[in-house]
Image 1 (cartoon, rainbow, N blue to C red):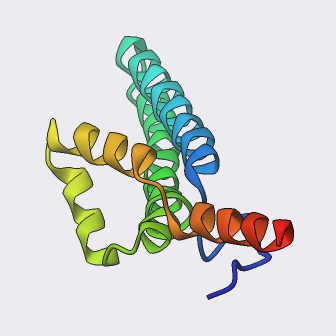
Image 2 (image 1 turned 180 degrees about the vertical axis):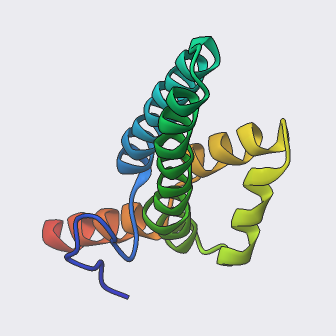
Length: 121
């Protein structure tokens, strides 16, 4: 199966791309959480709602992007079923799952190694 040419929604991603995309996701979530903390300090209820609505939108979009462009492509690369991405909602196990996806060599890596070996002969 060939890798899709889409930059935002690839068919498969390697370990380094997974790491970079996951770190960007974590930074977005931490930034949104910081905005949420600003909303808690606001005096006006209108201002609180005005801050919380975009924060919830950012969290929703980040979660969509996590599944669509980070977890699912990496799981396809390592040969796992995409339904296992729901493990990300289980505390503590989600961290172990992300580390496993990061360390597990995928088919992209194997294909590169096979093409290098073919080029030698």
